Length: 384
Image (cartoon, rainbow, N blue to C red; front, side, top):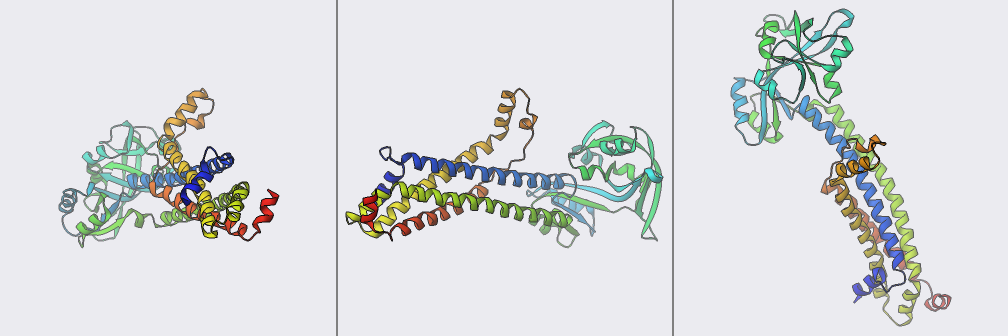
């Protein structure tokens, strides 16, 4: 009976205060939608950044200082179902160019088969021959395809720790990746081409994509494993701090929403104050009255949060289609509408927004009712 009365006061068509309940629910729904879109955008940007780092730079893990045959460990990793990819590569410090026109970076070399399957976009030339340079480096240095440039490597020596090796190498191909920092410091090459410069003293490493726990178990004592987090500790810490600050700012936004929610619940109770006091005059128990009007406000809040969550799912799932529609509608006048937005829809993020707001809404609903219970019922009824 209490729930039935509460729902009647909240959303019944015969209730004269139905419009107030609908306005409160819609306002809360839009607030929840705004929070979910902001969270999805920030999480999407971070996920996109980490995904690019793992795809082009650090992979899920890099195994170095390998004890034993590199190919055997490579094959062991590939044979496991939790490992998506594994390939052998060589990485050496390099200075490319001469004098003030040189770039200090890293030369990364793969086998030809791996080089062709990796996500580096070869936009010109033949990747099997010579040095593979990024498009941004080509523009910055004024190099041209098939130009011969000096490459100085610090390769391992027999007696000395490192031995500088210098040779003129032809630019065989041009690559592109969406990671600017990678493009500005990394050169690529076929391993057989690198052997002509560095000799046989370079150390091979294994790059792996897959489950980190599985990789660690398979590697064991056979080598030193560095996960993508270990390789990007400073960036990872900075991104985590950014995430904490994001949630702090959203908490301030939530505080504003909750203040408005309290005011709305107060207004809703004021609109139904006559019924509230009439029930007291008729002898309804105080506990039942509190339950009815608390549930009334809570139902309105739940409908608002639920509607906002459903709208968030629909909009975030179809964000690309929605932006394309508005772009078409505007005739391309607003190019921002057609821009790619990194929106990551995660159910746990929606729950993290919905549940705290619903729980606090329950507390916000109880407080106004308890305050009104202290007033004299006949005085309020006469004023009505």
